[in-house]
Length: 301
Ligand code: FAD
Image (cartoon, rainbow, N blue to C red):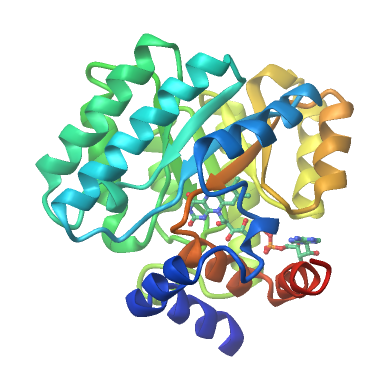
């Protein structure tokens, strides 16, 4: 727990974030980040598509406090929409409200996301609103609900560590949902703290949405959960087109290929860009062994 908190604390450090951007890509993040620009990311996506794997693209960035920076992020994501269309790849987009100005002004953020969702809808591209920490949870649901009055290419994430997740999954069962355990540090007033509670809630949420909801994305590297889902869908006669497994780029690669080869829908989360620091630190918080990926990259160059 101390190690986890240490890396989450680092992930929120703005100074280190800037330093990492300036220092560049050399710390080894490239093992889990698919390039610094969209053209590089498209190369990785084409390779995964050839293996029957679809992708969700995250133009890395979060916690923006400057309108110009948020507008720049919006323009970059509009560029990702164009790139998906131009290269005709099997991919959709994941974005973070705090990257598009949620911490500056809700309406400003709404307009930015709306522009992206609008353009994406013209090409039939789905937009996932990634979930961040608790303070941003309800505003992010509000953004999704408001946008879904005009668009149907939008969905979001349910995090099983939240005490309110069971209520949320029922309320938002009409949406395509990604279900995860949760990656931020949250207090016990709002979130379960033990792995047992988080895992148990995770399974319940997945089962609920598989049985009652729209499309379910099960986003985990946990083989116990994956094996449970495989059996659950057989027992309940749920067809493969109702769900997919998702994992992050660079993690458990053999398992990603194996699941796709077994005929499951599989989607790899593709982060790209220079703003990789917070993303990377959260991966270290989840699993300090992920540091091995960095060490290997540094020594095998
Ligand atoms: P864990 O609970 O970390 O691990 C369980 C077990 O799985 C481990 O004990 C180990 O046996 C095995 N395992 C895990 N990782 C590995 C590995 N790399 N190699 C070998 N074995 C491993 N969080 C959010 O808060 N918001 C989001 O929007 C969000 N989006 C996500 C999208 C995707 C596609 C994914 C995969 C995760 C996302 N997350 C998000 C992160 C998520 O909340 C978890 O923090 C993260 O996935 C770690 O939990 P886990 O279920 O993968 O497995």
